[in-house]
Structures are given as C-alpha cells and as structure tokens.
Amino acid sequence: MKSLPWRALIFSLLFFCTLFATTSFATTLTDIPYGTAKEQKLDIYLPDKAANSPIIFMVHGGAWRFGDKQNRGLVKSKVARWVSRGWAFVSINYRMLPNTAPDQQAVDVAKALAYVQTHSAKWAADSSKIIVMGHSAGAHLVSLLVTDPSLSDSKTLAPIQGAILLDTAALDVSRLMTQKHARLYDRAFGDNPIYWRKVSAIEHLHNKVKPVLLVCSTQREDSCEQANYFVNKALKLGVKAQQLRIDLSHSKINTSLGDNNLYTDQIEDFIRTLDPYFNAYLQTRAR
Image 1: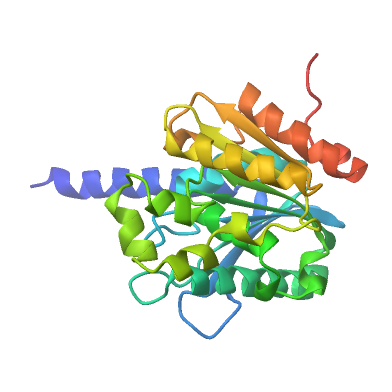
Image 2: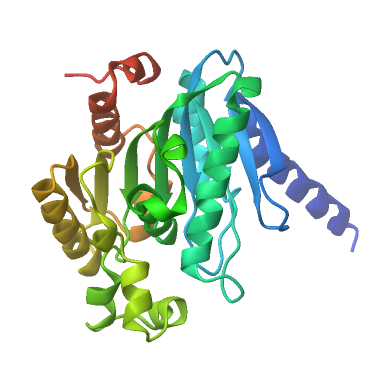
C-alpha cells in the first residue's frame, strides 16, 4: 500500500513531461470558443516570437463521432516541426455524431476558420497565409470546406493557400456507399443518396478550388481509389491537385507527419509550391 503514492507521483511526473514536451516550444492558448456550443472550441500554438506567422489549421478525425483537438498524436510532431519554425498551429474541436451530422460538422469547421481569420492579428498571425489540413473524417470535412461554396463566403476562402487531406475515403460518398464499406459510414451518412451527394466533395468541385494535396495509405484500398477519382476530376477542371501515396497505416499518416522523414519532406514540398513566402518557415531539405 505504501507504494501507491509513489506510483501516483511517477504517473503525475510522466504526465507533466508529456505535456511539457508538446508545448515547451510554443505559447499555447486553449479552449478558445468560436461558437456557443461547448464543443466549438479551438487551441492555438504560437511561436515564442510570432510575427506575421503563417497558419496551419488542423481538423482531427474520429469517424465523425469521436476525437479531440488535443490528441497527442494529432499535435505533437506537427507543433514540434512547424511552430518551432514560426508557424501558428490551430487545432479545433467541433460538434459530432450522434447529435450533429457531417454536413453540420463542416459548418463548424468553416465557422472556426472564419473566427481564426478575424482574430489572427492579435496573435501576430497572418490571416492571408493559411494552410487547411485534416485527417480521416477531418480530411473529409476540410474537403467540403474548400469545395462547397455554400459553407462559407469568398472572403473566408480567399486566404486559404492550399489544402492537405490526410487519408480520407469519403471524397465521393455516393461511390463509397454503393460499394462494400465499413459500418461506420452507415452511421455517418445514412441511406439517402441525396445526402450522399451533399456531403461529397467531388460533387462540389469547381475551377476556383485552391490547390489540394491528397495523401492516401497504400495499406488501404478505398482511400487511394477515392483520391485518384478526385484528382482526375479536379485536373479536368483546372484545379491543381495531386495524390501522394504513402506506405503507412491510416493512423501513422497522421501521427508521423512532422517527424524527420521523407513523408514530411514531401508535404513541405507541396507547401512550397503554394507561395514562396512559406520557404522561410520550412526546414531546408537535404539534396
């Protein structure tokens, strides 16, 4: 019994070290409300000397039902990589299933982005230099954000320089739902073909969509197939879109981004193509 306090102390120290490792190189502002619902909150990780910092706006995944903006696998490597080089990193929460359907979750994402743009000046961040990024269900929501004009006005979309979609299989929900698929998609999208089209980014593609990088896991069948269909249609419309096939698991595509690896280098190569401004905020790649 006497060992229990020591175990508690060790656990507390480990927890503190984990928290410190995630935030020691950044000023962190947590649980900033961008709406009235309790889930509508965001965190901002700022460099110690922020000055016109470009912004990475991140949307977590979790089958449209779970997940959190503070998940260590979501933020740790990305904050370590980019905030240390002068980026502002925003991670958001949003309302989820069962009470909020995916189309309304996308409304939350657009609302959070508008809030960031409106308030970025007080964080010394540059609202005209934004990269939007999402993983899994979050990537699906980001795909709707950048393709569906009904979600936000042109003023909100204009500062987006590009979108990075990390391994979503829900770009064409109609195609997904008429093929063999996981049960989680039934819970998210139901059985109404009209709704499937509404929440399919491929249905909303138009020639003014900003450049998109679609990362897909070669360890899954559905995400690379969906990315390929999306890229082909985007290119026909004159949209700059490319597919990056990665031999990593669905989870690792999220958690290893920001680590010192070829995958992260390839993501940064895409970011460089968006605006020369970003070069100063990216690690020099060894040739």
